[in-house]
Image 1: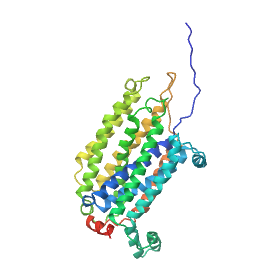
Image 2: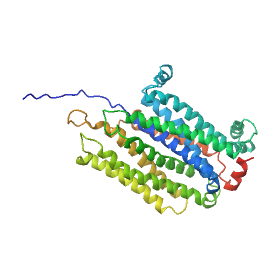
Image 3: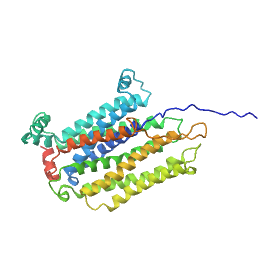
Image 4: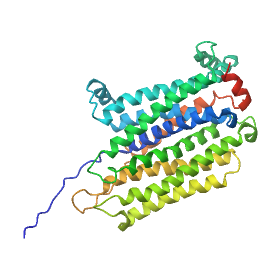
Length: 366
């Protein structure tokens, strides 16, 4: 009998924390695009404040997400290779075409919807606000039907992002936990948790000169509640299916993985409980929703992308991952979130939170 030992040289992780951030921000963006389209179609049940938060989540995520992706590519200059050396059989190469289109559509959609809010800045005494007011590029109007069409095109573009981001992971046959149908579906479903989390954070940042009860509608609470319930329940179903689909290594026989899966399940249960106990929308509830949803959505992507890479492919050695403190780790995570917050704080000053659903209907159908 011959015994052959396989020794594997230490290798750097294929996906860095930058990729986790990219999947979080771009996922929240395309999920918010879907919710924004629904809120436009049923605008009599949603407030202008809620729709503004959703459309800004679409736009800001579509800006910050690609920047995090360039970090994962190790250098921004690598991005141009995707365009000058197009390989149509590669999902990543196709993504280089889908992503800029979606980012542009996301920004245009937010600009079109908030044009009337931007126009009101022309009457401001602040000279900088007056300059921002010029971004309306004229006094022309867009109808409600035209706005729905634009939002629908952006949503279709967002679905192409969901398709390519899920496919570029699911095609990796060397990782059974990636190479399965449950993984891209799980990322898609939990993207809505991120969308609600970032939208709730924007709702918290919006000026609150009027009372929260008059500025928000029952339809807003219903939209948030139903999204949280549906996403958390589906995630609780999908996580065990995803974890069981690994023929070479049982996650349920490893204490570290039991802890990770348990923490994930607690996160989804927390989102479900928050949705069930949500009675009205106020600034305190926005913080609770933001904390539970963003943690759960981020941790799901961390476990399924970073922690999966610590599972050995050939031998039984331990391959722990330690988050670095520099730009490739914690500092990069804080920096990207800081950029998101900076854009959110600037954009939140544009939104006129005093508009009611009825006034919004008239201003979009002129």
